[in-house]
Each structure stands twice: as C-alpha cells, then as structure tokens.
Image (cartoon, rainbow, N blue to C red; front, side, top):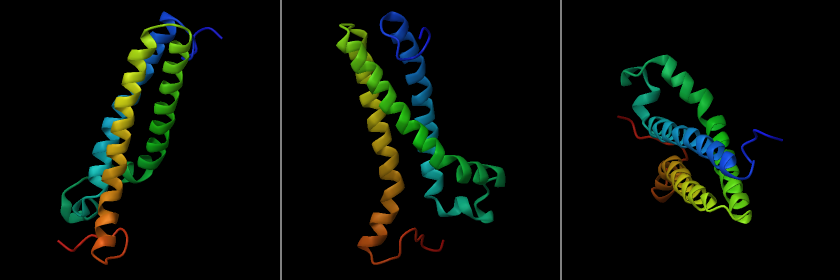
Length: 131
C-alpha cells in the first residue's frame, strides 16, 4: 500500500506532516466558525455578515468538526505507528497531534460555553440575549 499516509518511515512522516498541516488549517477555520456561530449578530441581517457566509457555517461546521476529529485521531495513529517502528519522527507527529487535540478542546469549549452559561443563569439552551 505504497503512498498511503499510514506508511512507515520517512515517506510516512512526510505524508503525516502534510495531513497534519491540512488538518491544523481546518482546525483554525473551525475556531473562526465556532466564534461566528456563537455570535448572535452573525445570524441576523443586522449583523452585516453576508448570507452565503451564514450558509457555509450552517452547512459545513459540524461535518468539518467531525472530519477534524477523525484527522486528529488518524494523525495520532500515524505517530504511534512510527514510534512503534522505532522512528523518532513519530514523536514530532505525536506532539503535533497533541497540539491539534488542544485546538479541538478549544473549539468544543467555544461551542459549549454559551450553553453552560445559560444553564447557570436559568436560561434555555442556545439562548442569546437580545442585542
């Protein structure tokens, strides 16, 4: 299975690095999407945001989050396989996957923050105060 990202050795590291870079960029986009999703003005015409951006965030955010999660798990798997085969480069990819895991936790905190705050203040879930 030559050419697959789970290939061991230097080629596997290069492919893992490329996949991890793309996955990291997706994570950065998801943080922006999460911040927009939790902004009540984003969902209103008065917010000044283009409608196509709302549609993109609405349609792509959760599938993108699932893809990002799968990417973090996959990169961790590649790193452990490289470490198990005795390649030091697996340690670097493991570090990268830990950083991406922290990015994932940050995205989840942004998503959940409003809901936790609403529960503490006796408001319904997904409630945003009128602006």
